[in-house]
Length: 638
Image 1 (cartoon, rainbow, N blue to C red):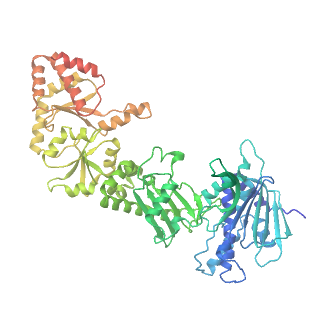
Image 2: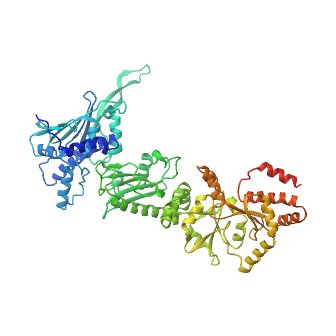
Image 3: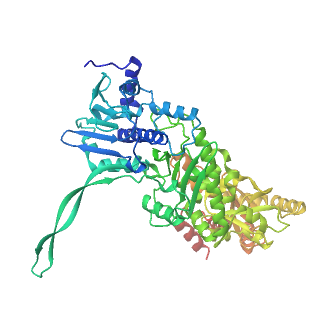
């Protein structure tokens, strides 16, 4: 029997296929099983109009048969099979797909058979077998034919096609597994546990049962009795032919068949999470792009759950076959805490079925998913506020980063999901904050510090609260960047009470304050020189309420940002400093004491100036660089 050669371009493609197209060898089993499923689909579809097929849905099956002695792995189906000519066309010419031709014929007939779905559209998945096998034999018999066909190849060197006997319709793909190497233990693909794991991972939801002989330990009575007259037991190994795939996935079932509790149980088992998810999204979409989705927002954020290999995300399926385990193209990073599955028959798969030829469908699905996720979170905020606040505690940082990402591109989509503290035990959305504003309030006031409690104690906040206005309290530099990205809420601009003009002073009052600073210029210059280079300016302020002093900033870098940069990865970042301004309260007794010392005892005034600067740092939440020196300085004043 003469060996036939692949066409030159097919030969190059086969070499590329084996060595380059597929990035993960283990997907070969997914491809062979998908082809078997397609073959059964075709025969099942034919049986709708041909009563001679003689098989009911319960009769179709895919069998996996590992043989360690022969070092072969066989995948057998009772699908439509192939003729000798079809073997030549589908297996001898790479990238010519019988599945694709069948799908075209169905489309041309405008078939409405919803139960038929074809995955293998490229005719190349079969050749992934050569990544793990040094020889592949296909024994097949087409429905309606009496004679079987054997196709055999060892790879790019060519193939043979010959007639053979085969009792039943269908196809056996027999892969002779390569010898083990230092880099790859190919023999693992003959292990039952490995095969079950691969089926579970990639082909668990193929619609037809995948069967395999599996050994189990069984407990049995020996027929003997012990000293107490009780029966004795022993154990033996038994082999059972098991269905190792789930077939119909939970997300493909209707809401009348599967309750929300069933979905939650699925989530907890799949993701090994003992806590219920805080939100569940179920979607069955039909239209330009049809898909089904089952998504979950976890109840808590586990350490490192969203980093590197630990990141779970959304798994992408096409007709029940897993395409991507962690599809990062479905939703943006701000929703990367969402877990679940999306299954669509309308995806355009690339040649390796690992990526997409173009992502138009994926983009449409992703946009719809994000709208539904946002809607579910808004509903949770409205209906179960404590639960939403717990969610925001866990995942709010993702939303905040999303607001700042790409120069605020997604800020308007995300702004209504954000919460901000207005007291130690109260959080509001910006929409709620604006709704609560008195008519006289024209701006949204906020203050930043390490904690809500400390932010509430800042002297600049006293004037705002004294007018009956609420403040937003920010506890991280990221919060400040979020407000900078948002810019405003319903026409109300944001006002940083530590750096911005509060808008409370009249023009006359501002002029008087400026004159007051001019009158005390020599004194303020003296204080600035006494406190050193860390302070770029000293001025008087009437906004400090009951406090003697405070520390503010000028320019784009605030004190909270300075704290953030101090722990940055580079030396240059750690050197970034805010332009600090020391503000003194001219109505406070401490100021009067300092002013008197300046006029009578300037050495004492220098020490008092340093005390005021350190007090301002403490009030503003800035760490004092040398606490011992400050204590000694204060002790000298007694």
